[in-house]
Amino acid sequence: MNRSRMLILLGILLLVGALVVLVILPQTLSPQTPVEPLATSAPEIQTTEILVAAQNIPRGAVISPDAVVPSKWPNDSLPPADLIIMDPDKVVGRIARTDVLRGQPMLETLVAADPESLTARGSDASLFIPAGKVAMSYPIDKLTSVGYAIGAGDHVDVIVSFSIVEVDQEGQYPIIPFNRDLIDDLISAGLDPEAAVTSVQAKMSSVTIKPRLLSQLTLQNVEVLHVGEWPMGGLLPKATPTLSPDQQAAQSAAAAGTPTGTPPRPDMIILLVDQQQALILQWLQQEDDINLNLVLRGAGDNAPVSTETVSYQYILTNFNITLPPKANTIIVSPDTRVVAPPQ
Image 1 (cartoon, helix red, strand yellow):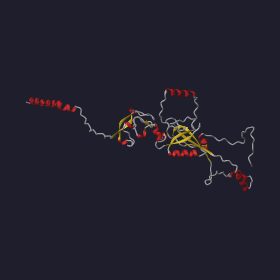
Image 2 (image 1 turned 90 degrees about the horizontal axis):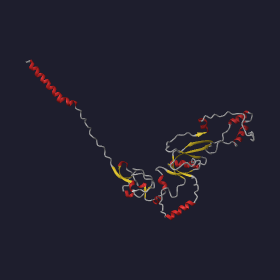
Image 3 (image 1 turned 180 degrees about the vertical axis):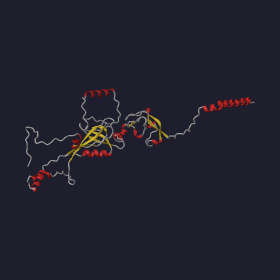
Image 4 (image 1 turned 60 degrees about the vertical axis):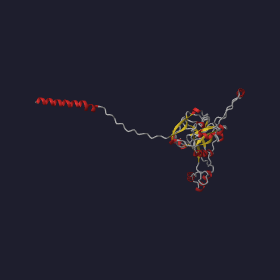
């Protein structure tokens, strides 16, 4: 009887074990399927189809059909509606007023019907002036132009140098320092005080005041628009008449017989400045006793710099110049005529 129960119990245990192996264990060991998060739809960007440059278009070039292409442009960064061009027929065959980069929207302000129409609207020089800037002429020579090394597109700094003297604030005339030490020395030497003052005042009329020179960097990173006078015909290309073979031959013969002379050096440049810089440059040029100079920046160097005014004291301090002691003799030329100071 006990043996039968043992067999029945053993059979039950084997049945339970088989269920665990066949049903429960595979579910436990099977990889869990990850729960995918609900996809959030990205906000739809509203666009408008406009005409853009399919390639770089140089200034003055005639726009070809393959140079422009329609493209969808985000509405939140659209140019002004009255300037946008959507019809290729309004662009193809016209002239680019300025360099147009690939992918740049084609605008009414970027194209012109022909060079003559540009002249009718004013000088083409205004086409090269960025917003917020004005063009201003500046006289140059060999020294102020870095030996005529400055060219269009360069960036320059403006350096000024001038001398100052103390003046009377009301009359604006130079003030001659009154030498009280000399008066005390004359009185100590036995001269009457009134006579000592009279003597010093008499010498003051012949005193020469030494102005104090200083130099400072003023305007920085100023772009050069053009070197020399602006061409009468402008910089934009003009239509060239077609010459017959005989006319071309005659023109070549005339050019061959004409000696090529050395072109004159430019005496002015045209700078791009803002209105405040234009006022500063105007004032500096109008002041007769101010010396101006241009220094040429390296290509790509547009960083502002901080400088310190250079004066006599600056030179002594920053270069550790030691003043020589006073001596009771000096070196003179044998032909020098020594004149004693007035008593």
